[in-house]
Length: 524
Image (tube, rainbow, N blue to C red; front, side, top):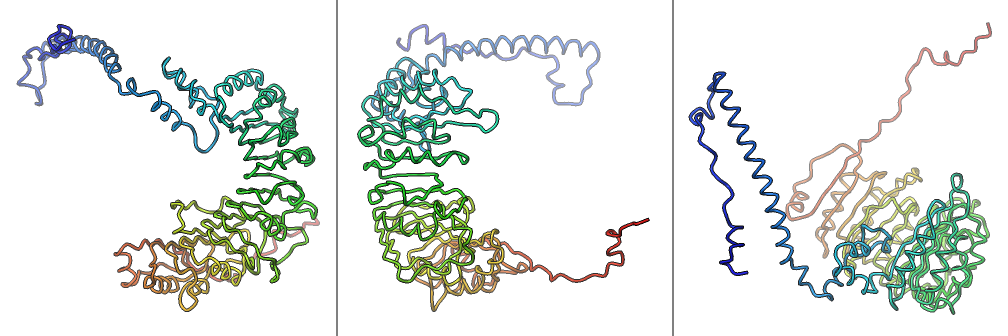
């Protein structure tokens, strides 16, 4: 259509007109009080204008509808090539979990926009290569299975990332979830399984757990997270799938002896072991068992374990000085949680490329530190109540690349809060000068460091080759002014955040004349 087309001219017609003249124009914006006849005239004017506004709104809505329809014709998405559209679709998939069987989320939602999008989505196998399948006794698993079959058929020849969740309630739904129809579908695609995650009632997944390397030749990642009250015998039926040679990433929630598992330890790149707090001698994962696991996994890149010591374990644990060497040249992340206390750090442990170290009582007690994953940085997050002062110093001296250090004292061991005190800060200063690359220090509550010690620490480290960039600490005592030389560092970019905790007054005895009267026994 050319610019002279009458359709264009019609659209460009000015639909707005000036309001009709008013006899009250000179009264507008004043305190004039109209008479009764004038008020009647004003009401007639307002009604006529309201009708005109309604007609204009109707006209506007009509034009808006035509406007939107025509603008859609020139939308860039209409001209987007299919290959680019596929990349956009793939970028919309979730990154923290598998794709959901939800009509309002990717990839299903792409089939609800228009025919072209549906055709592109259904012809993009990678969109359908991952899926999370939830279930519980109230769900229609046959309908879920039919949807899963259509989903996986669209995945072409891609390797599959499948996560299954089977809920078994203790009271409302005590029965085992019937996953038969769903598992029969998955078994037809077992040869393409690359990552498999089973959570909940593992007994419901027994047909999958019985598969071995012949049925799962591409299986690379296995996650088994059982319900707490589930029988441990389930792992005795999973020895074939756990022992598959192609596995390089394993995550297990267990209550059996981890060393008894038929894992191909030397092939593992990622290992996550979570033991329940039932520290029996035949199933616990203690400190010595953890070291043995590290020895068996020379190619680990990421390790996270929950340690459980025996009931007989009391006091600090001491690693033997003649511990065999443990060398993990590829390890980048090491997280250790549990109820234990160390008198010394692991001797002869070599992890030259470690980037993240977390040692604590609970995985939720630390604040997230978001830094780029590069060899220039190393993050340490340590619960100091789990280590003696000498062990903590040994640990810090073992990792000279530490740049971001977060320290706290767990409330689970309140008697050990003195380990984050002025003595520890002195170890970070000359002459010992631990953590020479330290740029960020965060010290959480339950500490008894003084303002003077923090100030001395800042002065010492700001004149080093790698000056501090951030110091955050809870300081014992009343708030005091920052010294001028410290303030000069702040003016140059140093970020300081001090929270002061007043010194608790010593308890004093008070005379109570009525003491003991509330315990009097009336024999009358």
